[in-house]
Image: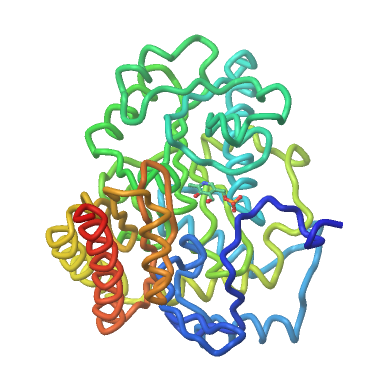
Length: 399
Ligand SMILES: Cc1ncc(COP(=O)(O)O)c(C=O)c1O
């Protein structure tokens, strides 16, 4: 056996956390880290949020699992609350983002099937997308590094350039079923899609009878300062995949759809053992209790501005390290002027956790509950990291 019993699929940092408190993670050695990685947008309400802990432990003492062969009241309640808060009429609960996307893709294909067009199964996607690691979702994401070696790519995904709506239009054929897009690309490097582009995609869908699918697995649940990122554009989808933040750290996801889009998802055509189980539903409902509280999202918007302004100042001071600030809400990216992995390490040395993304970006995804003081603290650490790197660049140049 080589070193560890675990698959070597993750390049892990040499850090093991023992517990978390709000925006902080504490290692097994008692060292404290400011967590602006947030489990890659999972820990929407930070660590050990008292309302989530209470909801989970209360449910754990009552009932952990019951099959979807029976009524699950927490599931009906969360489904209704998500439908009330969005464009959707119907919800299917999953355990992960990739499963929510699988459900979204299946929903779109079944829609055309029951409408008498089984030939319409293809989905248009965008360069830089990330939709998960199942065989279908790596095909949807279209990134060679995730497809290589896993056999024939699942058929039915046509990729065009990021924000290239003309190319999307040209890619539509009589076999096209849907267009799938993240309103803000996460893994692709925190790239928001302009409102105008979403509007054009919506028009194309109307014109050609296609379904518009949003992937809000990373950008949803308050991350951008609205419950869902697409609300900023006012352009609603027919189907939407969510996950991450809705569980606040408990594994769960969901596929939301209009009545019309979900028309093919009839009894027996889809299923899951664990999706929508009582523990996940208790936590999901508790997350919504907090995120939908009066003023919560407005406060996220205010804090996001504070953070973005602070980051812009650091970028102005150290352009040789940080080239640009991008993103929206508490989903911000530092476009790096040097390898993002180095910047990430320098920030980690300052005990600030962030996440590298595509396009040489570092993602900052703090809990939505982050305080102003923690934002200032993080900015100081980012500045200290950037300063150290800038000094190293200057020293190397002077040699
Ligand atoms: C936008 C997006 N879609 C889908 C996924 C896949 O989610 P999961 O890892 O829960 O399967 C991710 C995960 O990072 C994501 O960011």
